[in-house]
Length: 521
Image (tube, rainbow, N blue to C red; front, side, top):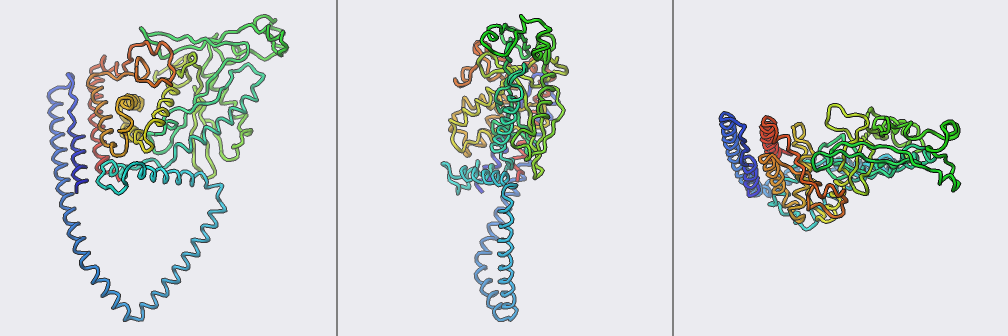
């Protein structure tokens, strides 16, 4: 009963969060919002009354059943012993038990012989069970049924797939694929592919979806021999622009030729000799003008996968299909059990020696020139979540908080990046020791409250610009450290209609969360 009362109070606190009414909302809208709040309050009162009545009836029934159970079982057993059918049924039950034991033993032998096919599934299930046991044993009493965090954690269904395990499988496979590429391209003048870096929600340890998870990897590019990359970073006011260009220039390699390297200088040897004795430069293959072309690079990488796949050790474990994409290399991998992995390899170029890249990642613009590269913070973000995981409690619920909120945001105008930015800010202001299971509900309310406040103020600061709370191990360009905070809600401040719509959608999120916490099974 205590848990039920707490449950109702929490849901009411969510529903009755101060409504965000901006200057743009008229009196009719305010009245509708007030009527909806009153309706929800009446509905909660009715549900509470039904729940309390049901609990009292169940308690009375259980007490009566316990008093009568001893007498009922005794009478039943005495009557059964007087009937000859009792012994016949008992013998049949013994035979049935023996048959079930034999079938179970045979099934176990068959399963053991097919261990290679089912090992990944067993690994995921075992890992999931172990994770649940650790959550119940790490510093919290698993018998404490009054713990509201425990109640909600048990009611909410988390994804069945083990993201950590599958991420390792994908990283190993892509790593082997890149090593094959390096052997094929060792004497060419194409970009040098560096080891891939897993990025995005799957490698951060959470996913907004239960299935169809996409495993994103960023493949850094370095210039081949005789070439250099120069980043042309635009500026908007005092901060770097989101879109940049990778300009390719040739450099003299005459010194290398004198040292015995088998390479002609693109700058100082005649074109006829270069054409006859050496492959074309990068400027003649993957560039448009003097800029590295994203779409040409994507097609080149897709063709490489098609020709190199049979050289990968795992090729016979998966059916591989290259999916259409103009700015990345997307793969669909299907194993013998018909389970599918979706992998997307993007490519990027470092900004100096930092964790910030310009990448081939698609932008929100309707049209993006093929020579334009977007600024990517994905590597810095995955490093941030690894930093948090290292310092947090072993049974920390911060990723589950992020995952739950991401689920309810699907289909709304709020992006998961907005949510992730809000959670990253809270992870640097709320002590990591306060993200355990017992704190689960409060942290969910903190996340929603923080988003509400940002919407009211029409301001959500980007995490990596001018933020003193960024961990020191994350390497940022000097311009980021000196920059003024970048407002991700700037468009709301400039567009009253968009602001009013965002407020309306946030009310819908509150309703979704309330229904999920009440009716989730």
